[in-house]
Length: 216
Image (cartoon, rainbow, N blue to C red; front, side, top):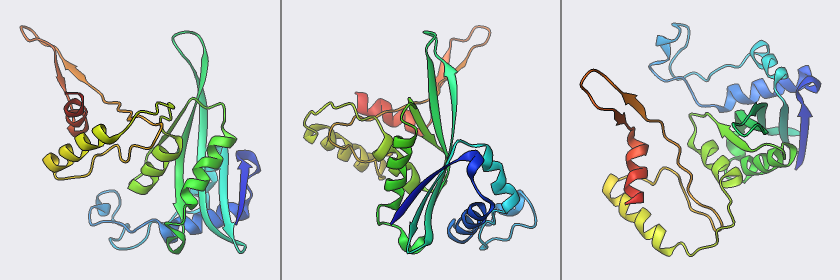
């Protein structure tokens, strides 16, 4: 296995071609609703990432690739930006814009390896994020880059509560597995509705409800 980290401006055309092909062949297929975006998107066919579209990624901070026997089996694109906190200190956010692992090489820890490499390469980042339609990418980010607080308390009781919640909602606990030394991190939005003669009310989504359940 060979791992490489390439800075955005140094990404070659050949590397973009390889990543575009890996994405197009291994990122699922269009659903029946895809034609709402464009009539040319045919349900059942794989999304196609052109080299022109991939070239935009040259403006991001980094490309991480994993090769086995000289074959590209996984890649990760990430971008970073800085922002000033209320305290005046500058912080950096690292955003995973694309994570793909070749289908026949999945469940071998390749995505986890790429995430750990990202943490090493972007060691100054204070927050990591991802937007993905694939739950595996979200789980990997949470496991590898999630809130490791070194809070080594026994998890028997919290996990019993998780099991109770899962039985109530008939689904898996959304934040995933609670690893040793980690804590759950939940961030939700509340939209205040204020009108004449009305009091402020907060509308919460499904995950907010789950968060409130676990706090009771």
